Structure formats: structure tokens, C-alpha cells
Length: 267
Image (tube, rainbow, N blue to C red):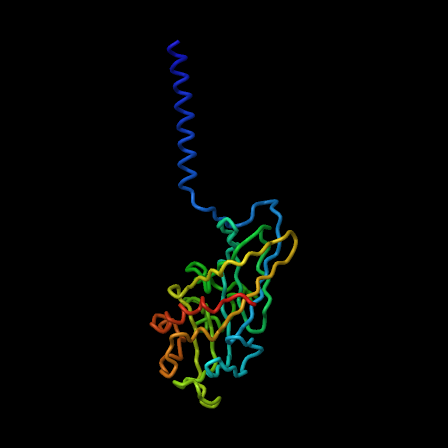
């Protein structure tokens, strides 16, 4: 009888400990984060449609002068940036990270097929502008590699300086009252990179659905005029960030902090 009593007690204690473990585990587990689709999960295609803008006017081509609402003239000679670590956030808050997804946004192209992703209902997208430290140290592996883009390097080679995350160049009216003529416009060059200037953007919630074997587009605008927010343009020293040393400056940090604000949904 004593042995049976001990056996019953052991079973009761074991069951109690298992329940306690499961309860604690449920309380401590964070929202799940996935890094790749499981096998046999239905998939659809995610694409980005990215438009360059100056305020409410779409940039049709380089070397066209656009005028902001306060009268300031801006023209673009180059507008390129890298998007990476693209994540889809589901309605329940869980996150799907698209493996190895990188987009090099150029003026000449608006449509970018990102990847096949699991079907489902999502509420927003999150991405980096630039690369994490490990990716920023990679070498280009071929002529068609997205990393093999010399105007996204700080020097004649991609390394050891890492990549330019955001390359924005052109001319701008630098007068205090934003009333200068086209002939008075001054050149600017903002080449933002280095690990310290990596920035992330989480778009506002705007539900979308990935359907099986269908291509879902997310339409975003990149308003380049916002890059100048808080920058005193009549100071010539505020018109150039062109090296890794420059990227350690207060100006570079301010520009980097402005970059996430460029992205809004297309109306």
C-alpha cells in the first residue's frame, strides 16, 4: 500500500510541475517572430511600387527643377537608397522577416519584386534604410550583384568603408527666403552610410492581404523634400556629406534621422 501511495504522489507532483511549466512558458513567451516560410505553406508575391516625389509632385526625371510649397527650388541629379531587413507584421503583431530581401531603389525604376511570402492578413511593413553591420561588410560577388553599384560606394571599392545607404544629389535654392532664381541654386551631395547611420521605418498600419499565387503591391512615395527638414541651407557647410568621416558629423546624423520621414503611402 505504501508503494502505491508513493506512486500516486509522484504522478500528482509530476502533473502539477508540467502544468506550472506550461503556464510560466505561456506568460514569458514574446510575440512570435518568423524568419522564413515553413514548407508547404501557401505563398503569394510581395512587390513594392516606389515613387520619388518632391512634396506633392512626382519626380519624372533627373535635372528637372521642382518648386516646393514655400517657393524653394530643387532639382535631382541622383536619388538612390537601399532597403533591407524587410518585415511583414501580421494582424496579431507577429513578424515575418523576408530572408535576404534587398531593394536598391533607383529613379529609373518604380516596381520591385521582393519575394514570395506566406499568405495571410498583414497590417504593415517595416524595413531598414541601409544595412546591418554584417551585410555592410560584404563584398560584391558579381557584375549584376546589387552590391556592385559604384555610386553606392564611398571610394573606388566597396570596402573597407562599407556602402552608401542613401545617395541624394542635386541643386537647391539656398536663399534664406526661398526666393532665389534657378541660376542661384547651389549643388548639394548627401551620401549617408556607416553603421551608425542605419535607420528603420515602420509604416503606419494599413491592412493588406497576401493571396495564394497572387502579386500584392505596396505603393509608397519617397518625398525627398523632407530630407532638408531642420537644415540651415544658407550655410554652405550643410550642403555636403561625401565621406565616412563626414558621416560622423552632426549634419549627417540629422539627415539620417530625416530619412524615415520620407516614406508615406501613396494616396
